[in-house]
Amino acid sequence: MASVPSNQGVLTVTFRFRGLAALAAVALLFAVALPPAQAGIGDSLKKKVQKKTEKKVDDTADKALEDGEKAATGEEGEAAETGAAATSEKSAGSAEKVSQVSTKFDYVPGDMVKFFDDFTQDELGEFPVGWQLKEGTFEVAEREGQRWLRCTSITGDVRMKLPAMTALPEYWTLEFDFICPEPSGNVLTVAALNGNTEVWNTVFPYSGTALAFTTGDIFSNTPVEGGTVWGKVHHVMFMARGTGMKVYVNRQRLASVPEINAAAGAPTTLSIRLWSDKEPMITNVRFAEGNKPVADPFADGKLVTYGIYFESGSDVVQPESAPVLRTIAGYLEKKPDVRVQIVGHTDNQGKPAENLDLSKRRAAAVAKVLSEQFKIAADRFTTDGMGDTKTVADNAKPEGRAMNRRVEFTKL
Image 1 (tube, rainbow, N blue to C red):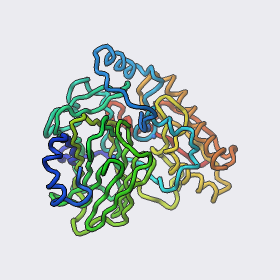
Image 2: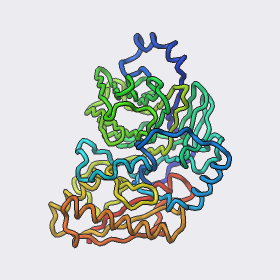
Image 3: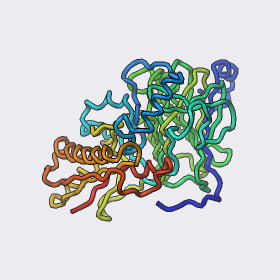
Image 4: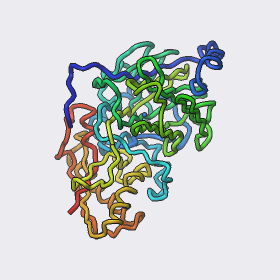
């Protein structure tokens, strides 16, 4: 991975939380002064769309110590996944065949990770080292064994510490897990800015059950499948492709704009704002450059992907893997003489022997899905796993571990 000069500045991504009282005070301002959407981003998907009513965050000292020890020792099996973040809630969708996922879900994470944080490197109750505090009070909290960044004040503003860029890359992705435990208006707003000029913005939830997207004169208001969004973990994803912008929540594409507001200029900053007195939280934040669409995914003889997702410690291929596997299957259908080796890789979290075994089982599981669900002959695949022995980045950094969690396909 190309290094980024450390003497450059910081690309700003802002999170703000505001209480219900503040919302009431500014309701008239939203109605008059703001665009319609302004009212209120596989180690893969680590604990996302909730299967049951969420429990309150457990911050007792004993549970924090127990969960912290499990995370440090790898008792859960292995923390190294492919993609952005794998979550237990995602198992709610595990019964769905990967091949049956709608083609409208076409999100593929970028392959050059610039920022990743699941807050496992931080102390409970402290402010995370990978972020800048601009307003409010934040702390790293535990929720069902997973680390989150929680705002405990009515208003809050934090920013990721990212390598500086004069403008956002032409191709980039942002994804993160988000939860607001109780009904609380329009909590999350993500906007792309050029200086102080807004290029586009999205609001989730909008009017309680939808996602709104605004750019220039374009406005969309798309209902979220499943109705209410409160008390559930949602995986929010943004994918920029040149002037185009797509937004997803879980496996539903909720905005697709071929051209963002050109009059506002190219985006230079991402602003993520949240406001609520219900202590909303975020985790598994991943910002990456790429992937640029290519006609031949095997043009270099090898395809390295971060878009195949598993739950933590599991070898079950998640439905979110559909876009990548659909591309690979389509290529192999057109090239019937091509055989492929599939190799799984992990980071160094957990026990090496377990990681090695898991990486092998995951590679075999990917081959099985391609064979059984996409109807590619099984004898066209060989599989292997390398665990954490073939690193491509520094495991000492969260971004490096995210780069090491991958699946590689090589033409034979």
